Length: 210
Image (cartoon, rainbow, N blue to C red; front, top):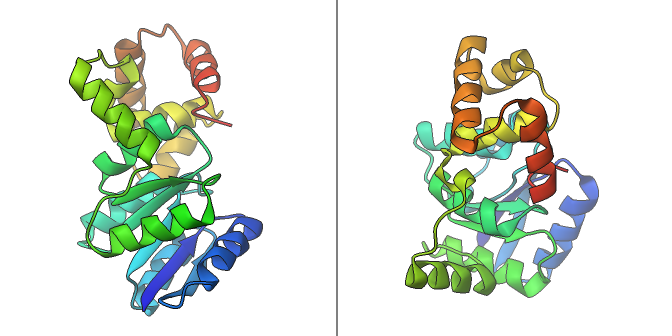
């Protein structure tokens, strides 16, 4: 039996995922979480085989939760979930230590396939993304500037674009304000942005923030 924790702050999404999984005899949702605290509590109290984790969690986001899990030595396969850009977020998820990425608009059979893949120790990405990665590798396509941002830099860029202040970001990520400001300066330099306004417009245009 594959024991699963679903972490998403929207009850409708969690219920939908549970419904998809309920038809599978070898899978069971043993716990749900709507924020980071509930994720860590669920992991501590339950034996889990797969964590389905929404990237856009309130407060401490999915990437930060994933980072803390890996830093704490957790080897539980994490399947990152998002309604945002697969082409970007899937790559960032894998680099951050996730075992796979699935879009919220995926068909039920894709979700089941992804769960089984990461449970067995594999890495899951959609056939669309796998093909894109293969094409990019074959033709040695130049990466867009945001691909050169670290996972943390990309995370902070999106937080700035969503309207969070430096102080709010520092509190959420458990780092000091000066460190956030340093990250911001690196992001602006790497992306050739003059200010937060340009950064925000770019992120909205690319679909990195809602």
